[in-house]
Amino acid sequence: MFKKVLIAEDFDSINIALKQSLESLGIQEIEYAKYCDDALLKFKRAKQDNNPFDLLISDLSFVEDYRKVNIASGEKLIEAIKKIEPELPIIVYSVEDKSYIIKSLFEEQNINAFVHKGRNSISQLKKAINALLTNKTYITPELDYLLQNKKTKEIDSYDISLLNYLADGVAIEQIETLFKKLNITPNSKSSIEKRVSKLKDYFKAKNTLNLIAITKDLGII
Image: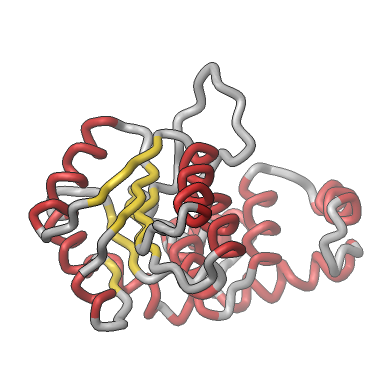
């Protein structure tokens, strides 16, 4: 069983529920932080004191308030901690349900489990922890299909950026300019138009509006 767990979550009620659940599993040393900056500081301090955390449970979104922060999201916190301790087991505990984001968390951030906040999330959290103890990954059962959906497997970050701009009503010419400023390639007007056409064919979309509707329904954007 894990000995020392760090929880990054900004709501007290959820922190209390998570702490009680972890204690019921026999985990005695539990700390939590409401800000990602504080979570990273706690993690670094524990490592320096030779009493490191052996599990991170983190939300993805944190409500903004009066305090200025350097790390504003769970994704960035995970990225920062992975640079320090690449093998640290991580459970994401979030309301997120977009397939691309969840897929990237597993494939790019190398998280070990994803638990969707909901009615059964506490029992699922316990299952996730037990899965990690046997070197298995875990995802909330009702979201498992998102990772199996073939329509999302060949979509990359370039496609996601392009689809999001199209969904916001940004014209191809403007996307070309934005991509060049952001050093996103390919960024010529013709290459962007070809990519949009390819996406329409891939999703069997009649037009750009239909493409946006389909990808939204699939949880891609």
